[in-house]
Image (cartoon, rainbow, N blue to C red; front, side, top):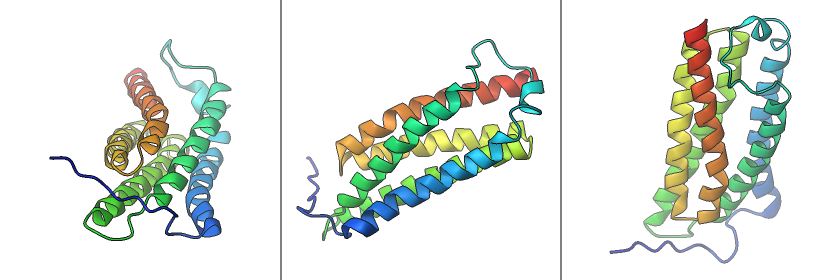
Length: 172
């Protein structure tokens, strides 16, 4: 038995509201991460013991810029896939909720790790983030498969960040 989701021919949200709803939360998350991180890189973070696989510092903002663009586009597409009626609408709302929770966890990680210098609690946050990104991929698959595929590089990067966070915790 296969469930088919009716995706509307035109998005339920108007174009300006849909763009704002997709871009503004992602931009806010990026700003929180940047503000929490920038001042800590040359001091506290530089003084930490890091594993041999730790990438150079310049790679992080490049990777996150690309990932945030993909995340915003995925949000825009998911918002456009809202079923107008029917039981699948509840599943769509669950996908939106999962998307919002993973974005909130993303925003929380940098202040916990960099500002609070709480490496252990940051590991808990990044593990929860990884779980939520994977769940968001799973939930969004039935509404727009491109949304799910757009989030796969993000899941890979968060997996790497989880491993890096755990290694830094172990070394410090």
